[in-house]
Image 1: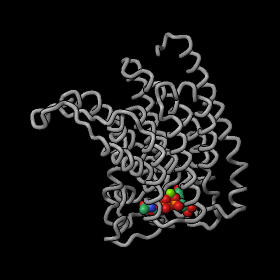
Image 2: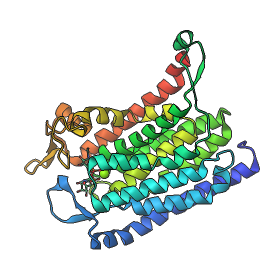
Image 3: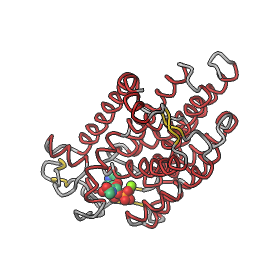
Image 4: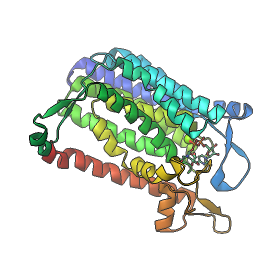
Length: 352
Ligand code: UD1
Ligand code: MG
Protein backbone atom coordinates (compact mmCIF):
# COMPACT_ATOMS: atom_id res chain seq x y z
CA UNK A 1 0.00 0.00 0.00
CA UNK A 2 1.67 3.17 -1.19
CA UNK A 3 0.31 6.66 -1.78
CA UNK A 4 2.08 6.74 -5.16
CA UNK A 5 0.22 3.58 -6.11
CA UNK A 6 -2.47 4.41 -8.68
CA UNK A 7 -4.98 2.04 -7.08
CA UNK A 8 -4.59 3.72 -3.67
CA UNK A 9 -4.98 7.16 -5.23
CA UNK A 10 -8.15 5.97 -6.94
CA UNK A 11 -9.53 4.53 -3.70
CA UNK A 12 -8.83 7.74 -1.80
CA UNK A 13 -10.48 9.82 -4.52
CA UNK A 14 -13.56 7.56 -4.32
CA UNK A 15 -13.52 7.90 -0.55
CA UNK A 16 -13.56 11.69 -0.68
CA UNK A 17 -16.26 11.80 -3.38
CA UNK A 18 -18.48 9.27 -1.59
CA UNK A 19 -18.04 11.12 1.69
CA UNK A 20 -19.10 14.40 0.08
CA UNK A 21 -22.10 12.53 -1.32
CA UNK A 22 -22.83 11.11 2.15
CA UNK A 23 -22.69 14.62 3.64
CA UNK A 24 -25.27 15.96 1.19
CA UNK A 25 -27.46 12.86 1.46
CA UNK A 26 -27.58 13.33 5.25
CA UNK A 27 -28.34 17.05 4.83
CA UNK A 28 -31.14 16.10 2.44
CA UNK A 29 -32.75 13.31 4.46
CA UNK A 30 -32.75 14.68 8.02
CA UNK A 31 -35.52 17.25 7.32
CA UNK A 32 -37.57 14.45 5.74
CA UNK A 33 -37.09 11.86 8.48
CA UNK A 34 -37.34 14.38 11.38
CA UNK A 35 -41.10 15.02 11.05
CA UNK A 36 -41.65 11.26 10.61
CA UNK A 37 -39.86 10.63 13.91
CA UNK A 38 -41.99 13.28 15.65
CA UNK A 39 -45.16 11.74 14.27
CA UNK A 40 -44.22 8.41 15.85
CA UNK A 41 -43.49 10.07 19.18
CA UNK A 42 -39.71 10.24 18.78
CA UNK A 43 -39.11 13.73 20.06
CA UNK A 44 -37.68 15.39 23.12
CA UNK A 45 -38.08 18.63 25.01
CA UNK A 46 -35.16 21.02 24.55
CA UNK A 47 -34.63 21.24 28.29
CA UNK A 48 -32.28 24.22 28.39
CA UNK A 49 -34.72 26.39 26.43
CA UNK A 50 -37.60 26.00 28.86
CA UNK A 51 -40.16 25.60 26.04
CA UNK A 52 -42.48 22.67 25.42
CA UNK A 53 -42.28 22.16 21.64
CA UNK A 54 -40.69 18.76 21.01
CA UNK A 55 -37.60 18.53 18.80
CA UNK A 56 -37.30 15.40 16.57
CA UNK A 57 -35.07 12.81 18.26
CA UNK A 58 -32.87 9.92 17.03
CA UNK A 59 -31.76 11.53 13.76
CA UNK A 60 -28.56 9.56 14.19
CA UNK A 61 -30.52 6.88 12.37
CA UNK A 62 -30.12 8.90 9.13
CA UNK A 63 -26.43 9.72 9.46
CA UNK A 64 -25.69 6.19 10.74
CA UNK A 65 -27.46 4.40 7.90
CA UNK A 66 -25.75 6.54 5.27
CA UNK A 67 -22.40 6.00 6.97
CA UNK A 68 -22.87 2.22 6.95
CA UNK A 69 -23.79 2.27 3.25
CA UNK A 70 -20.55 4.10 2.44
CA UNK A 71 -18.26 1.83 4.41
CA UNK A 72 -19.96 -1.23 2.96
CA UNK A 73 -18.88 0.01 -0.46
CA UNK A 74 -15.30 0.07 0.79
CA UNK A 75 -15.38 -3.59 1.70
CA UNK A 76 -12.64 -4.49 -0.85
CA UNK A 77 -10.13 -2.08 0.75
CA UNK A 78 -11.23 -2.45 4.33
CA UNK A 79 -11.20 -6.21 4.32
CA UNK A 80 -7.74 -6.53 2.82
CA UNK A 81 -5.58 -7.49 5.75
CA UNK A 82 -8.47 -6.95 8.14
CA UNK A 83 -10.39 -10.15 8.69
CA UNK A 84 -12.46 -8.45 11.37
CA UNK A 85 -14.16 -6.16 8.85
CA UNK A 86 -17.52 -7.92 8.98
CA UNK A 87 -17.40 -8.05 12.74
CA UNK A 88 -16.76 -4.32 12.81
CA UNK A 89 -19.81 -3.68 10.65
CA UNK A 90 -21.98 -6.01 12.70
CA UNK A 91 -20.75 -4.41 15.91
CA UNK A 92 -21.58 -0.89 14.71
CA UNK A 93 -24.99 -2.01 13.37
CA UNK A 94 -25.81 -3.85 16.59
CA UNK A 95 -24.84 -0.88 18.73
CA UNK A 96 -26.92 1.44 16.56
CA UNK A 97 -29.89 -0.90 16.86
CA UNK A 98 -29.58 -0.91 20.66
CA UNK A 99 -29.26 2.88 20.66
CA UNK A 100 -32.43 3.13 18.63
CA UNK A 101 -34.18 0.66 20.95
CA UNK A 102 -33.06 2.84 23.85
CA UNK A 103 -34.50 5.96 22.21
CA UNK A 104 -37.83 4.21 21.70
CA UNK A 105 -38.02 2.34 25.01
CA UNK A 106 -36.10 4.75 27.26
CA UNK A 107 -34.09 2.08 29.02
CA UNK A 108 -32.66 2.30 32.49
CA UNK A 109 -29.03 3.30 32.89
CA UNK A 110 -27.91 -0.15 34.11
CA UNK A 111 -29.73 -1.87 31.21
CA UNK A 112 -27.98 0.43 28.73
CA UNK A 113 -24.56 -0.63 30.06
CA UNK A 114 -25.51 -4.32 29.96
CA UNK A 115 -26.74 -4.07 26.39
CA UNK A 116 -23.66 -2.21 25.21
CA UNK A 117 -21.60 -5.21 26.37
CA UNK A 118 -23.70 -7.38 24.05
CA UNK A 119 -22.79 -5.25 21.05
CA UNK A 120 -19.11 -5.92 21.56
CA UNK A 121 -19.72 -9.65 21.00
CA UNK A 122 -19.22 -9.58 17.20
CA UNK A 123 -15.80 -8.03 17.74
CA UNK A 124 -14.83 -10.37 20.54
CA UNK A 125 -15.68 -13.62 18.81
CA UNK A 126 -13.90 -12.65 15.61
CA UNK A 127 -10.87 -10.85 16.97
CA UNK A 128 -7.85 -12.74 15.75
CA UNK A 129 -5.37 -9.88 15.86
CA UNK A 130 -2.48 -9.47 18.22
CA UNK A 131 -3.14 -9.83 21.94
CA UNK A 132 0.31 -8.55 22.85
CA UNK A 133 0.90 -5.21 24.49
CA UNK A 134 4.21 -3.33 24.53
CA UNK A 135 5.66 -2.85 28.02
CA UNK A 136 6.82 0.73 28.82
CA UNK A 137 10.65 0.86 28.95
CA UNK A 138 10.88 1.72 32.70
CA UNK A 139 8.85 -1.42 33.50
CA UNK A 140 10.86 -3.81 31.29
CA UNK A 141 13.45 -4.67 34.01
CA UNK A 142 10.60 -5.44 36.43
CA UNK A 143 8.64 -7.63 34.03
CA UNK A 144 11.61 -9.08 32.20
CA UNK A 145 10.01 -8.82 28.71
CA UNK A 146 9.35 -5.92 26.38
CA UNK A 147 5.99 -7.33 25.29
CA UNK A 148 3.41 -9.35 27.21
CA UNK A 149 0.65 -11.51 25.84
CA UNK A 150 -2.67 -10.62 27.44
CA UNK A 151 -4.39 -13.57 25.72
CA UNK A 152 -8.04 -13.81 26.70
CA UNK A 153 -7.67 -10.73 28.90
CA UNK A 154 -7.19 -8.73 25.71
CA UNK A 155 -10.78 -9.59 24.80
CA UNK A 156 -11.98 -8.37 28.16
CA UNK A 157 -10.02 -5.18 27.50
CA UNK A 158 -11.73 -4.73 24.10
CA UNK A 159 -15.18 -5.24 25.65
CA UNK A 160 -14.65 -2.67 28.41
CA UNK A 161 -12.99 -0.31 25.97
CA UNK A 162 -16.02 -0.29 23.61
CA UNK A 163 -18.51 0.02 26.46
CA UNK A 164 -16.52 2.97 27.79
CA UNK A 165 -16.35 4.82 24.44
CA UNK A 166 -20.09 4.44 23.78
CA UNK A 167 -21.34 5.37 27.24
CA UNK A 168 -18.83 8.12 27.88
CA UNK A 169 -19.89 10.03 24.74
CA UNK A 170 -23.52 9.46 25.67
CA UNK A 171 -23.17 11.03 29.12
CA UNK A 172 -21.19 14.08 27.98
CA UNK A 173 -24.45 15.48 26.62
CA UNK A 174 -27.40 17.76 27.11
CA UNK A 175 -26.19 20.89 25.29
CA UNK A 176 -27.18 21.49 21.67
CA UNK A 177 -24.38 20.23 19.43
CA UNK A 178 -22.29 18.64 22.17
CA UNK A 179 -22.63 14.93 21.29
CA UNK A 180 -21.97 15.40 17.57
CA UNK A 181 -19.38 18.13 18.20
CA UNK A 182 -17.14 16.06 20.49
CA UNK A 183 -17.45 13.09 18.12
CA UNK A 184 -16.23 15.12 15.14
CA UNK A 185 -13.23 16.45 17.05
CA UNK A 186 -12.19 12.97 18.23
CA UNK A 187 -12.72 11.49 14.74
CA UNK A 188 -10.66 14.24 13.08
CA UNK A 189 -7.90 13.54 15.62
CA UNK A 190 -8.03 9.83 14.72
CA UNK A 191 -7.86 10.76 11.03
CA UNK A 192 -4.78 12.94 11.58
CA UNK A 193 -3.19 10.13 13.60
CA UNK A 194 -3.99 7.62 10.82
CA UNK A 195 -2.47 9.90 8.17
CA UNK A 196 0.69 10.44 10.25
CA UNK A 197 1.10 6.69 10.79
CA UNK A 198 0.41 5.95 7.13
CA UNK A 199 2.93 8.48 5.84
CA UNK A 200 5.50 7.20 8.36
CA UNK A 201 5.00 3.78 6.76
CA UNK A 202 3.71 2.18 9.99
CA UNK A 203 1.20 -0.62 9.21
CA UNK A 204 0.03 1.13 5.99
CA UNK A 205 -2.82 -1.29 5.18
CA UNK A 206 -4.26 -1.03 8.69
CA UNK A 207 -3.96 2.76 8.73
CA UNK A 208 -5.47 3.12 5.27
CA UNK A 209 -8.45 1.12 6.52
CA UNK A 210 -8.74 3.48 9.53
CA UNK A 211 -8.67 6.48 7.21
CA UNK A 212 -11.42 4.91 5.08
CA UNK A 213 -13.60 4.49 8.18
CA UNK A 214 -12.99 7.99 9.60
CA UNK A 215 -13.56 10.22 6.53
CA UNK A 216 -17.21 9.24 5.82
CA UNK A 217 -17.93 9.33 9.54
CA UNK A 218 -16.70 12.93 9.74
CA UNK A 219 -18.90 13.77 6.72
CA UNK A 220 -22.14 12.26 8.06
CA UNK A 221 -21.55 13.62 11.58
CA UNK A 222 -20.88 17.11 10.19
CA UNK A 223 -24.25 17.02 8.41
CA UNK A 224 -25.93 15.87 11.62
CA UNK A 225 -24.21 18.65 13.56
CA UNK A 226 -25.48 21.18 11.02
CA UNK A 227 -29.03 20.51 12.30
CA UNK A 228 -28.09 19.69 15.87
CA UNK A 229 -26.08 22.87 16.52
CA UNK A 230 -27.67 25.58 18.67
CA UNK A 231 -30.64 26.06 18.38
CA UNK A 232 -31.17 22.35 17.62
CA UNK A 233 -33.57 21.45 14.82
CA UNK A 234 -32.98 17.80 15.67
CA UNK A 235 -31.53 15.67 18.45
CA UNK A 236 -29.04 12.95 17.63
CA UNK A 237 -30.45 10.38 20.07
CA UNK A 238 -28.70 7.42 21.63
CA UNK A 239 -28.85 5.96 18.13
CA UNK A 240 -26.03 8.34 17.31
CA UNK A 241 -24.06 8.39 20.58
CA UNK A 242 -23.89 4.57 20.67
CA UNK A 243 -22.99 4.31 17.03
CA UNK A 244 -20.33 7.01 17.45
CA UNK A 245 -18.71 5.31 20.43
CA UNK A 246 -18.66 1.94 18.71
CA UNK A 247 -17.35 3.34 15.42
CA UNK A 248 -14.49 5.05 17.24
CA UNK A 249 -13.80 1.91 19.29
CA UNK A 250 -13.66 -0.17 16.10
CA UNK A 251 -11.33 2.34 14.44
CA UNK A 252 -9.08 2.21 17.50
CA UNK A 253 -9.09 -1.58 17.81
CA UNK A 254 -8.63 -2.34 14.10
CA UNK A 255 -6.07 0.44 13.71
CA UNK A 256 -4.12 -0.95 16.70
CA UNK A 257 -4.32 2.48 18.38
CA UNK A 258 -6.55 1.97 21.40
CA UNK A 259 -4.09 3.77 23.69
CA UNK A 260 -3.98 6.79 21.37
CA UNK A 261 -7.77 6.79 21.16
CA UNK A 262 -7.94 6.78 24.97
CA UNK A 263 -5.81 9.92 24.98
CA UNK A 264 -8.40 11.61 22.74
CA UNK A 265 -11.09 10.60 25.25
CA UNK A 266 -9.61 12.56 28.18
CA UNK A 267 -12.59 14.98 28.52
CA UNK A 268 -14.98 12.00 28.48
CA UNK A 269 -12.78 10.23 31.02
CA UNK A 270 -12.89 13.27 33.33
CA UNK A 271 -16.68 13.53 32.89
CA UNK A 272 -17.08 9.79 33.53
CA UNK A 273 -14.89 9.91 36.65
CA UNK A 274 -16.74 12.82 38.25
CA UNK A 275 -20.04 11.14 37.31
CA UNK A 276 -19.16 7.87 39.09
CA UNK A 277 -20.85 8.72 42.43
CA UNK A 278 -24.13 9.32 40.58
CA UNK A 279 -23.72 6.42 38.15
CA UNK A 280 -23.21 4.06 41.09
CA UNK A 281 -26.16 5.60 42.92
CA UNK A 282 -24.09 6.85 45.86
CA UNK A 283 -25.62 10.26 45.12
CA UNK A 284 -29.16 10.19 43.62
CA UNK A 285 -29.07 10.31 39.81
CA UNK A 286 -32.00 12.10 38.14
CA UNK A 287 -33.04 11.24 34.56
CA UNK A 288 -31.31 14.41 33.30
CA UNK A 289 -28.25 15.88 34.93
CA UNK A 290 -28.33 19.25 33.26
CA UNK A 291 -27.62 22.73 34.63
CA UNK A 292 -30.65 24.96 35.23
CA UNK A 293 -31.79 27.78 33.00
CA UNK A 294 -32.16 31.21 34.57
CA UNK A 295 -35.02 32.64 32.52
CA UNK A 296 -34.17 36.21 33.48
CA UNK A 297 -30.54 36.17 32.30
CA UNK A 298 -31.04 33.45 29.68
CA UNK A 299 -27.91 31.79 31.08
CA UNK A 300 -27.32 28.30 32.44
CA UNK A 301 -26.40 27.96 36.09
CA UNK A 302 -24.57 25.15 37.85
CA UNK A 303 -26.58 22.57 39.79
CA UNK A 304 -24.06 21.46 42.39
CA UNK A 305 -25.67 18.05 42.93
CA UNK A 306 -25.28 17.09 39.25
CA UNK A 307 -21.68 16.04 39.02
CA UNK A 308 -20.53 16.26 35.45
CA UNK A 309 -18.15 18.27 33.29
CA UNK A 310 -20.71 20.81 32.06
CA UNK A 311 -21.75 21.69 35.60
CA UNK A 312 -18.10 21.80 36.63
CA UNK A 313 -17.35 24.38 33.92
CA UNK A 314 -20.31 26.48 35.11
CA UNK A 315 -19.10 26.14 38.69
CA UNK A 316 -15.61 27.36 37.77
CA UNK A 317 -16.42 29.92 35.06
CA UNK A 318 -19.83 31.14 36.23
CA UNK A 319 -23.18 31.19 34.37
CA UNK A 320 -23.04 31.05 30.57
CA UNK A 321 -25.46 30.76 27.66
CA UNK A 322 -25.99 27.24 26.32
CA UNK A 323 -24.23 28.01 23.03
CA UNK A 324 -21.24 29.54 24.83
CA UNK A 325 -20.98 26.61 27.26
CA UNK A 326 -21.06 24.10 24.42
CA UNK A 327 -18.25 25.99 22.64
CA UNK A 328 -16.22 26.02 25.86
CA UNK A 329 -16.55 22.23 26.26
CA UNK A 330 -15.68 21.67 22.59
CA UNK A 331 -12.60 23.95 22.79
CA UNK A 332 -11.57 22.03 25.88
CA UNK A 333 -11.84 18.86 23.75
CA UNK A 334 -9.63 20.44 21.07
CA UNK A 335 -7.09 21.51 23.70
CA UNK A 336 -7.01 18.01 25.22
CA UNK A 337 -6.54 16.41 21.81
CA UNK A 338 -3.61 18.72 20.99
CA UNK A 339 -2.08 17.67 24.33
CA UNK A 340 -2.83 14.05 23.41
CA UNK A 341 -0.81 14.38 20.21
CA UNK A 342 2.05 15.85 22.21
CA UNK A 343 1.92 12.93 24.65
CA UNK A 344 1.56 10.36 21.86
CA UNK A 345 4.35 11.59 19.60
CA UNK A 346 6.74 13.19 22.08
CA UNK A 347 6.34 12.10 25.70
CA UNK A 348 5.63 8.46 24.83
CA UNK A 349 9.03 8.16 23.08
CA UNK A 350 10.59 8.35 26.57
CA UNK A 351 8.69 5.30 27.79
CA UNK A 352 8.24 3.21 24.62
C1 UD1 B 1 -27.58 11.38 29.17
C2 UD1 B 1 -27.19 11.92 30.55
C3 UD1 B 1 -28.26 12.88 31.07
C4 UD1 B 1 -28.49 13.99 30.07
C5 UD1 B 1 -28.86 13.41 28.72
C6 UD1 B 1 -28.97 14.52 27.69
C7 UD1 B 1 -26.08 10.76 32.36
C8 UD1 B 1 -26.05 9.57 33.21
N1 UD1 B 1 -27.05 10.81 31.45
O1 UD1 B 1 -28.71 10.55 29.37
O2 UD1 B 1 -27.86 13.43 32.29
O3 UD1 B 1 -29.51 14.84 30.51
O4 UD1 B 1 -27.84 12.47 28.28
O5 UD1 B 1 -28.84 14.11 26.39
O6 UD1 B 1 -25.23 11.64 32.46
N2 UD1 B 1 -31.66 17.07 25.37
C9 UD1 B 1 -31.73 18.45 25.46
N3 UD1 B 1 -30.79 19.19 24.81
C10 UD1 B 1 -29.78 18.62 24.08
C11 UD1 B 1 -29.72 17.21 24.00
C12 UD1 B 1 -30.66 16.47 24.66
O7 UD1 B 1 -32.61 18.98 26.09
O8 UD1 B 1 -28.96 19.34 23.51
C13 UD1 B 1 -32.69 16.26 26.04
C14 UD1 B 1 -33.92 16.10 25.14
O9 UD1 B 1 -35.08 16.10 25.94
C15 UD1 B 1 -33.69 14.73 24.53
C16 UD1 B 1 -33.02 14.00 25.68
O10 UD1 B 1 -32.19 14.99 26.32
O11 UD1 B 1 -34.89 14.10 24.18
C17 UD1 B 1 -32.18 12.86 25.22
O12 UD1 B 1 -31.68 12.24 26.33
P1 UD1 B 1 -31.04 10.79 26.22
O13 UD1 B 1 -29.95 10.79 25.20
O14 UD1 B 1 -32.09 9.78 26.09
O15 UD1 B 1 -30.41 10.72 27.67
P2 UD1 B 1 -29.35 9.67 28.19
O16 UD1 B 1 -28.39 9.35 27.14
O17 UD1 B 1 -30.05 8.56 28.88
MG1 MG C 1 -28.09 10.01 25.12
